[in-house]
Length: 366
Image 1 (tube, rainbow, N blue to C red):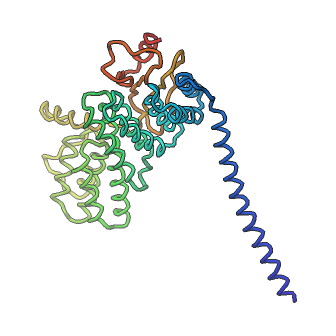
Image 2 (cartoon, one colour):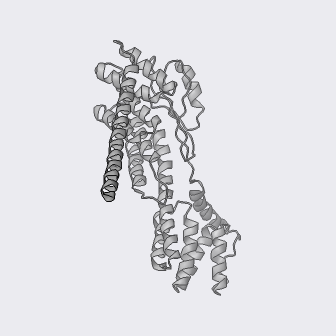
Image 3 (cartoon, rainbow, N blue to C red):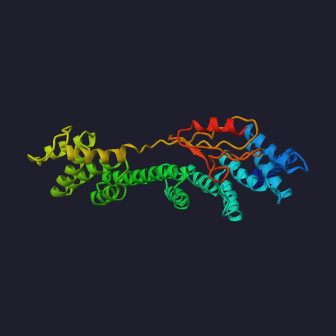
């Protein structure tokens, strides 16, 4: 009898837990549905496409990105042939970007590009799409499929619009993606080295030197090639890579480490460059060029500032990401007036890598 009571009690508790779990899921779905309904209800009902469009712009400037996306979506549904519909499609994707909902943003931007493949604002759409992939890049220790997707999207910007400022910024981000991939190779190489799998580690370090020559991981990769080569008894390879390291990075701490390793193994020769010794003029120029290619790359890059369109509003900065870099200011379209003669085509086509251009242009338009 006792065991039956216990079993019945256990079943009751389990049944109650399942009931509560199902009820919780239903409750969450109900709340989510209510939130969507509330958002739709908050979209102003108007028969005027321009008014609804400006409502969306105002919501963007107020930081109400969810409401803005709903308003732009409503405009597309209710006024599909309006002159504002194209911009609404584009700014809906921008709203999702600001919300951090990058998959939705990509979906909306790809829809825009399918409907308007020859739009003057296509460059902006491709660039914003690439930024969505770029924002989703994971940390170095994770799978780097997202990094490869970002590189493909950024390369498409460069291929389609090679003379644009978007292309220049895309190239910078591609370089940083490559630095990210090189960092992953170094991470795996260090792991193999700790596990004393020196041949596997050597392969990873060599790939960094061969495939990612302009990244800031090259000096360490060369030093570690020296290290594992000595462990494998590859004396000539150790000397050769130490010489390359000293030739290009004579002041680097990694060359000091490599030099000391050669010294400890009694492998120094009269031709071995001492750490910190400057090259001849010709060597110095070559080394400076190589060093410049690496030193101009950084792990930190900032989000590009993409202010939305609007009437009499100030710039809305895009949120900062985990990266910091040169800013590119992008002025989206105006619902009131076309830009001046500096505009080469689309509303989104004029950029300023310095960032000061935005304020001047905004004042000219409004």
